[in-house]
Image 1 (tube, rainbow, N blue to C red):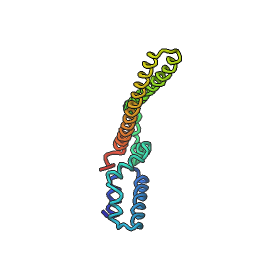
Image 2: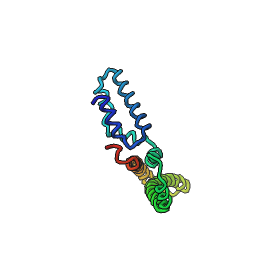
Image 3: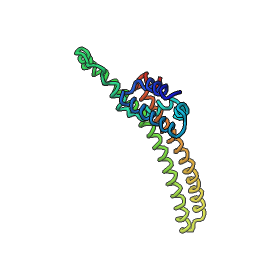
Image 4: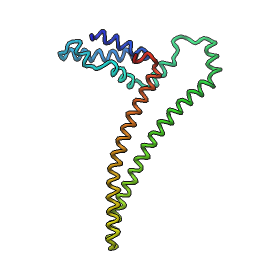
Length: 200
C-alpha cells in the first residue's frame, strides 16, 4: 500500500471524527512514514511497518477524549430551524431523562465492577492481617510458655500467609482483566458515539 492509498483509507475510516482530529492523525502518520523512508525503507515497507489500519483506527479512537467525540456528534452541521428548537425543548424531559438513565446505568456497572475488585483486595488484606496476628501469637504464647498454642498460631499464621500470597496473585489477575475490560468498553462506547463511519 502506498502512502497516498494509506492516507485515503485512513481518512475514510475516521469519517465520524472531527476534521481537526482526522487531519492531526493523518499528519502524525505521514510523518512516521516519512521518517521510516528516511531510515532506508521504501514507501510500501514504511506503510506496512505501521501495522493494520484496524489497529491504527482503534488506537486513534482510544486516544481521542470521549468529550470531543460527543461534542462532534451533538454539534449541528447547520443552524437549527425554529421548529427543531421547539421540538428539542418540548422533548427535553424525555430525551434528557433517557440520557441520564443510560449514563447512570453505565456508571453503576463500572463502579460495581471496581467495588468487587476492591472487596477482593480487602480479603487479601484481612488474610495478611491474620498472618501477622498468627506470628504475633507465636511470640505471645512462647512468652507465656504455652507450646501447643504456639504451634497452633504458627500453623494459622503460615496458612494465612500462603492464602495471602495466592489471593494477592489472583486479585492482580482480576484487576488486570478489569482494566482490559474497561478499555474495551470505553472503546466500544467511543465507537458508538463516533458513529458508524468510524472504523468501517
